[in-house]
Length: 270
Figure 1 (cartoon, rainbow, N blue to C red):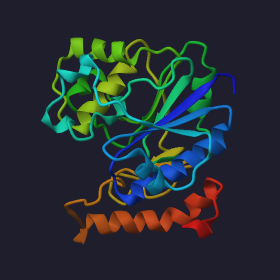
Figure 2: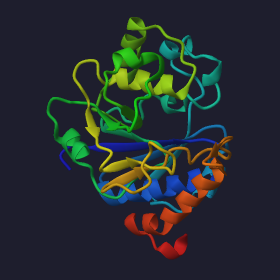
Figure 3: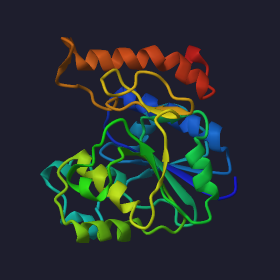
Figure 4: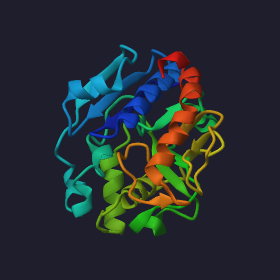
């Protein structure tokens, strides 16, 4: 690996399936990037030891930390009422590694092979940022700053020393919108990582936006899958006259044995 790497996750009081996804995500990342990388999980809204218990065994190099509770001043005045309960988690803290390239993964993003864009990002002397491709644009109030291509912040890569707070501040000075939803949060991040040059992106062929609901992709990618919607305990709607929660669980369970195998764990552990 040409550049030192730190990988971070954030987890709160999500469904038990979300914690199982985190376990698989950590094991997958460790298999892909190895012991030279640093690994840290930030925990909010539940006790740290409870989060570890729900997650189960992970590589011993994984550090567990309580997430800070104070949102950066740059963001605080832009948070709407909907941002108080979880939508701003990815920003606590804004940076986990001062001296490493930082790869922030959603807990439901599971990798088992290194995407081409990640490899390029780690060796890019021009210090690009990194995001994921999406199947549909969802940039909220910041859509006009994000361009027409659909992008997803479930994978977020920043170079060593990148000042994310300053980048977010530049976006908010150009468009001082209120952050009221996850789409606003995602759009603000995409805009911040695109200020000086277009970010590299992990394609949806390599890491699928994986769920049973169109336009999401029902299959696994060549390098990973992002199991959107898995953290919710209840999806309060129906899909083709079936409860959405039931379909989401069924889809996850169908893939579990293969997911365990791909990250190097025994399918018998499911």
